[in-house]
Length: 287
Image (tube, rainbow, N blue to C red; front, side):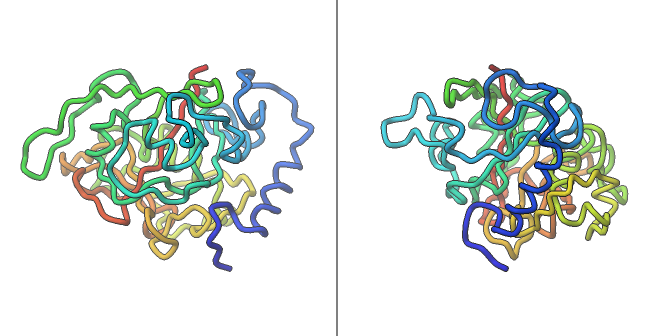
């Protein structure tokens, strides 16, 4: 059933609750920072695991924003990050708290901003999150380089500091070969495959629309749909999520995931921006 809410629908909320309740007795603490959400990994492991889902109000207030713009919303987070390009969507979406290669990261269940290009995100310092200018500076449609920008945007929300970057959508950067059947999307470093796909209803049977792009994933028993995650064009704006990686066959292109379903992987030129292209950030917990 279609839903206009920014949260998973009632049926899926119940499935989420039941799935996490099964492991409610698990008490091993892997996040003692006091950040929102569970303190122990409920599904998966430290390389790729799910702590819990977090409502936006559980984060607390965004420091540095003007009064009236400090609640954790899509618009207010973009303001704190200096990202003015694009259009806010899914203002109050739920977030997923993950463990990724030992880091605690928070990723919105739905995208936060549409009609935004990879270059817009890069020039706001929001792609790599590594304190450098990034592995490679993207190229404008004119052939000139984008403004070289240090990739270190840090926001403080509810007293916790987060580095803001894009998700890793592939197994390497640059891709090992876009011309392969899997397009280089699976791999140990692919946060999209290892964190987002296990949330999806197709993880149970591994009946992905694009099985080569998905590889073999875990099933965490959550059962979210493309509509819940906005990973198909029929689900609304922003179904293409920009990811970090550069294409190995088209140097001006960057990895995007979604649009034709959760498993789909593609590349498009870094300057593309229409209602399909989205900012879906990862907030990496620093303290």
